[in-house]
Length: 59
Image (cartoon, rainbow, N blue to C red; front, side):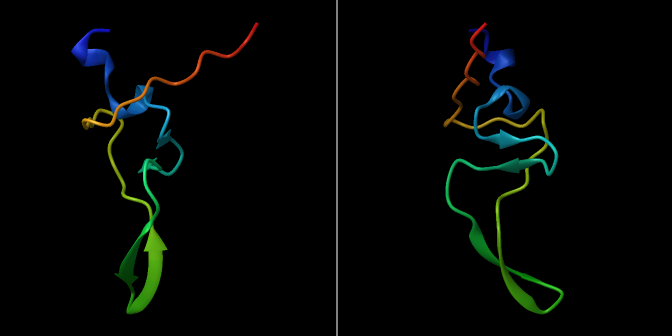
C-alpha cells in the first residue's frame, strides 16, 4: 500500500462524520467548564503509526 493511502480517511478507526479517531478510549477534556470524555479529533488527511485499513465489505 502506498504511504499516501495511509491517511485517517482510509483508516478503520476514523469516524468521518465527527472527524474523530476511535483507536483508543476517549480521554477526559474540559469543555465550557464541564468535564467530558472526548475522542481525539483529526483531519481526514492526518495520519499516525496505528493505521489499519478499513475492511472491504463482502459482496
